[in-house]
Every structure is written in structure tokens, then in C-alpha cells.
Length: 486
Image 1 (cartoon, rainbow, N blue to C red):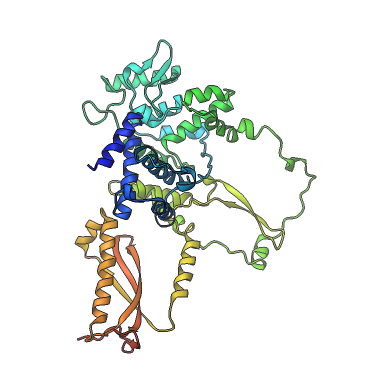
Image 2: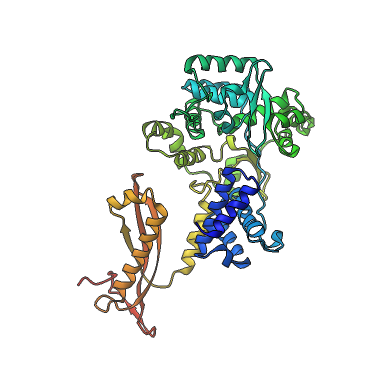
């Protein structure tokens, strides 16, 4: 451990930062140092700016993740290294998009909880909704935290290292008592696999996603969705915002006030001007004719999302043991992309009166629909780089034994694959017995085959020739052959 790392850890401990916050800050600072291969003490303003650009443009991280990275770097230079900078200018924070959560109706909550097979997981998720708790708070509940005399639940040292009390409804108390009779827990209310450990949040997440699939609910659901639903349903039933703030444990009232923009008792409390328009409505133009005249594109007959919606559930059930949480999230995002579950907006043609409802995108980087524009721009940029000559298509494939290693170490193995491919092509092409020239090429990584099996390989577009060693003439390949066979 370096002295700078030790000093930063001590600074965080002195300020009593949460253990999770300390770990996250150290990870981001370590990534910052590794990116340049130097100690942060030797890096300055330009390197910080370059690293932020790298996180945004190359890593394409979410703004919330970038904000945490910025906070970690600010702490390092402001507190540990004591740099006298204007941090708002030198290390600016990214503007975070303001998104509203998707809220489940009471009927959907009941439908979802009925689909949770295990009693333990169902009790945990029910507690999340009934008391408006975070899943991390529920899994750490002790038996002594349930106060049936005062009908409250005590939450100790939650987010922000704060204690609070939340409501314990009679119905939830009955459910928790039924759970205690079944499990007979001694210390933790929801014990895990170890003797003195509570259940992990990851186990609850997996149970939640399984119930989501079984329930066939179009809206996205996570354990935190139940906390959102608690707040909105309380607001719609007449509870004031200040009380909800205390129950949720929000430090800032503005955080709780966002639910005012979701609750139907607030949003739907006024009449739409559409109801005041005279009847009947004017005739609507024919969409089929207008879409042709205005050049509007219809969706393809079959999309990846259609396949996942029809066969995704069966596939996930069949391959439940091998699918990761990230892969499940991607499948769910593609299935919900541009559906009513993610919200909608009104599209209007500027050449005619035609209007249509457009559904919002999932914005997942693996979604074919969301990435179609980026893909088209990438192809256009590569086409602009092409020279007026023939190209050859060369494929480099990882052996099956190495592919299995690559699945768990993608970044490292892919980097080796790109470097090995580059060195191989340049070395062989530079050999006078083959071509004797410096060639140009670009490579595209494909990690999956047409049979949807993991099959990492590079597609390389190689020029049909290159510059001579002195760079004074063009050396062409033989017709129809990239390199002659010797």
C-alpha cells in the first residue's frame, strides 16, 4: 500500500465516511492512477480533464457513475493532497439527467408478490413495500428491531449513517410472525447461508427478477421499485410529503417532492383541455398514405426484441444457471425498449398533419434499436476513411480453450487479441518474401457467433497493398490474393 493511499484512507476514516463510500472512492482513484500509469500526486489539471473525457466518450459511463468518480478525485486533491484549486472549474461535476421512476399499481404489486416462490424472499419484498425500506435495510434487520408494542420498525445506521423509525402495519406484523414461526431466526430476521450472516441483497435481486418474469408485468421491477410505490401510494392516499420524507429517511425534502410529479392525485387533479374541444374531432389522415408520402419508415417485420419477447422467458428458465444479472438486464431492456412500460411521447410530421405516439427507448448500449444511429454513424466514418483500392477480409478467431478464459477476462484477452492480430499482419506483410510493405487495416470485434454462442473473433479489413519500406511507392498485392503462399 502506497503512502498516498494510506493517507487517503485515514482522511476518509477521520471524516467517518461510510465503508462502502471509502471502497468506491479508492477504486475510482486507483482507476485514475492506472489510466496514466503514474501516482495521482504527479498528475495535474490536464490529466484530470483527459480522464473525465475518457470516462464519457470511451467508457460511456452513466452520469451518476461519473459523478461518483469526480467526487473521489475531488476528495483526493482537495483533502488528501490539499491542492488550492477552484474545483468547480478544474473538476466539474456532470449534469445528471432527472428521471422519474416507473410506479407499480397496487394490483401489480399484489400480482408481483404472489409470484415470489420462496417465503423468505416474499417476506423481504413485502417488507420493502409495506414500510418503504431499501432492500439493504431489510436484509440487515434484527429481531429486536421489530417493536410490536409501539408498532414501529427501527432502522439503524442506514444510508448517511442515520437511524430512523418506520411504520409497522398490523398486516406486516402478522406476515413477519408467520415467517418467524417457519424459520425460527435467532439474531438476523432474515439469516443467510452463514451462521452469523444475513441474506445478501444479490439473492433478493435474483428472486425479484424471477418473480418479474413469472408475473408477466411489462413495467421494470427491482426491489427499489417497491419503495417508490410505497411513497406514491402513501401520497395518493393523502399522507403529506413531510411525513413521507421522515418515513423514507430522505435528508432533503426536494428528494421526496419528486413523487408529487408522479402521484395521480396530483397529476390528474386537473382536467385536460382536450375534454373541452368540440365534438366530433376532425377526420384523422390515413397513416399508411402519409407515411409513404412523408418518407416515414415502418418498423422491420421482425426484430431482436420480438424474438426475446416470444422466447426470452423460456430461454432464461432453461439457462438460469449460466445467465448473469447483467445479461438478464440487457434482455429485459431490449424487451421493454420502445414500449409503453418506459413512457411515451408524441411525434409530429413537419410536412403534414400526421401524428403518432412514440415510445421511449431503453438506451442500453447492447440494444439494436437504440444503437442503430451510432452504428450508422460509425459505418459512415469508416467508409470516409476507405481508400480507392481493393480490400481483403481476414478473420482472426480465438481457440475454444482461450475463449473460455476470455469470457471471464474480456478486457485483458481482447486487448491481447487486437495486439496479436496487428503484429501478425504487419510482420508478415513487411516480410519481402510475402509483400514487403507497410499495410493499413482496421479490425472489428465480434464476441458472439450467428448461433448465439460465445465465439470471440476479429473481422479485419486489410488494404490490398501498402507503402514500400522507404515510403516512396505503392506495393500492390497479387490479384485476388492478399499474400502469396510460400
